[in-house]
Every structure is written in structure tokens, then in C-alpha cells.
Length: 425
Image (cartoon, rainbow, N blue to C red; front, side):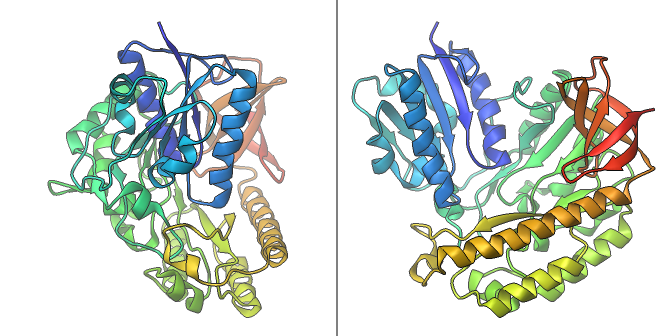
């Protein structure tokens, strides 16, 4: 039996797709082994959101070759869709498979055997409802992701995703419910609803709300978490349900900039006033709601005044952590033609926002002290279990008991920068 290992770069959607691909490869006769073990075939699910993601693929390929000079490598996904010639030239890369066919990797390999590298790229990704291989247990994650949507029609000027993944399309409703049942039956207590632009989900009249209501009805499922979602696509009934049933009190809403001049150049679909009004209304409606956001630093034309406005607004806004990204010119995105800022300016601004994120997360953690929260435990190390509350606080509790995938009530007693120390009740 041929062995295969998997590496996943980039977003949570990639993690979900890798889990499904693992099950599909097993069904086709492969033995899946840990990423650190030698394997006949290594699959890397690539990311091309930033230049850093592109470089990480190359570093990983060279690292794998150092450990196993006879390895065969398949590069799949977003970077494979856009940069097939560059990737096919890397050592021991035998297959470069774009997003249209990556879930059919075993068949692609059978159609294109060694020794010559093969690039299998669909020039146009089909805009049609899709299905996915039904996953069982996600070996890498306690909280399993379920893909409901792919592609995007928004075409923000900094983003290559519409070119790498195609236009927006939705998963067939019955198919995603079938996989959700399988994931719960395999032992997952929390499902994370994921996609590229999940708020635009639509299949035969079903919307994101219908997906959530269907998951709510699954016996054995404790939590439903919404992954990153565009601010203009969040339906009000979603907020009304948070904290009332299984839906986690959590939203990750990318703002990208907090200045209207920059948002206009980014071709975002809201003003900072509209974004601010929404998140203030959300935290009033949902007690204990955690809101995270993404910010791009150094977008072409971002002045010091633009940046200072972003810092001031995000300092006062009810967001509890920031994911900070340095702007990367992308091959196909419109903003690549604009002059970029010097690296030292981008680095300084990024550090300011990361420090702001640290402070805001610490303040959010301190606001939870003294409360008792259910924690889904994930990892055990040196006598401590680490897990998460529904509102995305990272908790550490001292216990030698086996708590993996177990929800336990925890009193939160001490806030630190990266976690809260708790006591099992």
C-alpha cells in the first residue's frame, strides 16, 4: 500500500479540504501517515493569499526533499492554480493540481504517472453547486471544519482568491448535512462552518441560516462556530441565535482598514461607520460576544494619517483581537500596479497593531474572570489541558484526567496574554 502524508498551508478552508482529501485518498487505497513520517507521496495544500504563503510552499518543498530525496510531491490548491510553471520546476514535484480537481487527486495521479511533472489546471473553475468527499474523524483537529461554500464575487483590489478559487458557488445542502452527521458520529463536538465567503451561501433556496438551523438539530453536536465572514453578509437572525443554542458567541469579521479612503481603494463594500455601527449593535445584542478582525498594513496609498485613524478607531471599537497582515502585491490583483510602501514602515505599523491586539485580547480575557464557562479540551502538556470557550477564549486547566474532546465547566481565575488559567468545577 502506498503511503501519503499531508501538509496544509493557509486558511481554515484549506484545513477542511485536506481532511476530506485524506479520507478520499484512503478510499483510493493509500495509507495516510503523519506529516513527520517518511511517505511515498507528500501532498501540500498551498496558499497564495500573501507572498509569505508563496514562500512557505517553497521552503516546505526543500525541507521535505532534504529528509527524503526520493519523495514524490503533489502541490494542490490556490498557489497551484495560479503559479503552475514555477511550482512544477521545484525538485521532486510531480503533480501541480489546481482547485477544480484537487479533491480528485488519486485519479489525477493515475492519469499522469511519473516521471514527468504534470500540471492539471482547469482554466475556468466551474460555477456550479458542488459536493465533497464525506469526512470521518479529522485527525489533526478537535474542532472539525465543514466546507459549505467556495469562491468569491467581491473582487477586492488586494485579493487573488477569485482568480485562484473562481466565482462564488455553494455546496449542495443535503451533502453538507450528510458530512456534518458523519463528523459528529466520529466524535467531533464542535463544527466550524467555513468557506471563502460563507455569508453568500445559497443552494436551492437554502441560506447560511438554514445551514446553522440544520446543524442545530444534530444530536451529539455541542457547538457550531461561524468562521470568517464578510461584514455585509451577516444576517440579523444569526446574532439573535448566538448564545441561545449551539451557536458560539463569536464572529471574525475582516475590516482590512479603518479609513474610508483606503477601504474605497480596496473596493470593500462598506464604510468604517457602517462597520462600527454593526459591531457595536452586535455586542449589545450578544452578551460575551468575541469579535476578531483582519487588518492589512501598508496597502498602496496608506498614509500615516490613514494608519493613525485605523489605530484610533480599532482601539475604541469592540473588537477583541486583530490578525495583522503586511500588504503583498499579488500577481492578478488590481492593487499590484500601485506603488507599495517601504518595508520598514510596514513593519513598524504592523508591530503597533499587534501590540494593540495583545492588549485588547488581555482586556477581553480579564472581563471573563470569575465566570464559569464550558471549555472544549484539545491538547494535554505537562499536566495542563488547553481548550476553548465558545467565545474563543483560550483556557488552560490543570488536570491529569483524560479530557480530549470533552466539554468541562471551568471557573476562570487568572488572565494572561495568550490564555486564561482556569479551575475545573
